[in-house]
Length: 453
Image 1 (cartoon, helix red, strand yellow):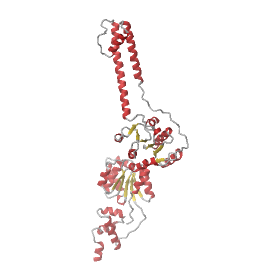
Image 2 (spheres, rainbow, N blue to C red):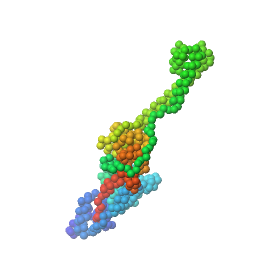
Image 3 (cartoon, one colour):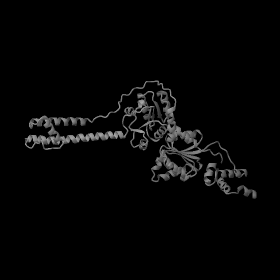
Image 4 (cartoon, rainbow, N blue to C red):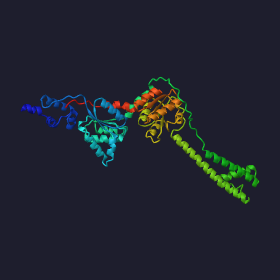
């Protein structure tokens, strides 16, 4: 009796035996189910029960069951790595989220989806969708169902990451853009063979110049013609000298009217001509003034958007100030590089931040040769194109090469096959995928697989 009591004594052994009496358990699942027991204590209790012959332990090949949420580039790469490592994957893709979102209680639908995945048998979850809101929603659902489940979540919004990790120590938040940015920045120092196998075609798109509104020119010509004609009329009709006639027309147009020269005793026709002069001159002046002010405001807007011709040399051009581009610019600034950013959207959140740090930001479409000329691509040290579109990045890089064949090009290319073809066919050797770089870090966070049942 004493031997039996000693074998099953302790706080946890009876709870362990009760669960093992129902079914076989893997170590991680049993640990999560017991909630408050430490790994050290659980391991010790299991060994004592095994030594007493009250349970059997079977060692399986290294195998784990994980959840992957997402359907983008990072999710596909994480899935491929996990499968290659022999993991069993429960894939919850964005399409499933969309179906759940159609339900009025979408969050409860996602929670049910997580429960249906048999979370008790899951070793870890990887939330790697391209959208932060999808990852965040699944994170909350997973934590509510299995608070002790290790979760790796991809979030580009770093403001909420500390809160999530502080609230649950089993959550690890990764930013793929921050992970990948140093690789892009270091590409500035990668040795390259400069010889190209073909001669790029020179583009003829000239940089923009300030053009006077043709309507202003026409109105100004009409205004001058009116003054000359009125001067000639009053010289002849009122028998004024040429200088007195011009003086009278000028003070009439300017609505000054000193009264020293007037039409009080003039003919009715001359008075009508004076009235017409006043009305026409008022229309001309206000139209010319309005169009001139409009042109000045437009020019000021263009300058506010950074749209001017830059004379920098040995600078770095970064096209795309999105998730990845912002971290690349930060890295280049830290190296002491002079940077010009080309961003298509004037609403990009980080434009004001970088302008406050004296970084030139040109708001425009980098695919236009004129824009590349204005930011000085011919004199640049390197050009980065990290827009969220492979073909746009390739177009920008090739257009830049047309102006400067020896320019260092660093392009973001998602597709590995396309990246290889670009290197082989177009001699653009510095092509990287943010998700290909980030997935190594994501997968390296996979926990050790339990081998105890």
